[in-house]
Image 1 (cartoon, rainbow, N blue to C red):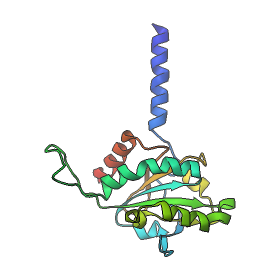
Image 2 (cartoon, one colour):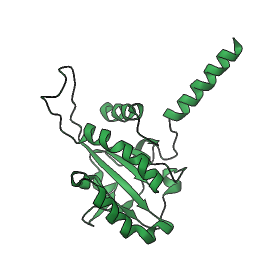
Image 3 (cartoon, rainbow, N blue to C red):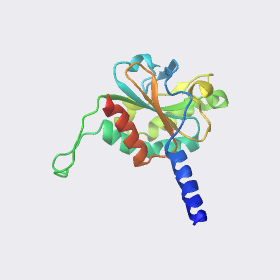
Image 4 (cartoon, rainbow, N blue to C red):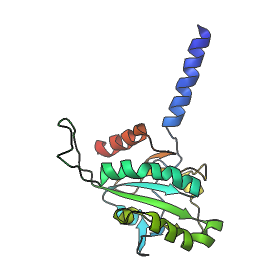
Length: 189
């Protein structure tokens, strides 16, 4: 019996650690970051996003980019895409969210050398409908300490409140529970 209880405790602890990400960034203002959009125009984070909740997905490597891509369809469909009423279930509840949404490939350090080619490659592979939600960071600063990045090969997601303060973080591949938590935070306010 003690083995079963101990096993349940371990499984529960592991499950909680995978769904709750404790970040040193929570409660702090998102650091000033200058990115470029697909037209090579500057976008200043968080200054240009204030007044709305903002969801930022950030990736530092190809491996992280692959996991970041698992978020694109569900996040786009939830926050940006339009519901086709003819296909909607009668019991579906659709909420219109007024949020900023950006996916940000990060080119820092050695990766800056190949950033132009990588940006062009990403643009070529990306549906033009997603261009407004794609920003590129190309700079020397990694933001590792400010944003509490632990692993280079993992995408990180930040929810900023209307003032630009980090109110939630998560990382890794998409799953429904992570999106539910993001929605809970946005809908609370």
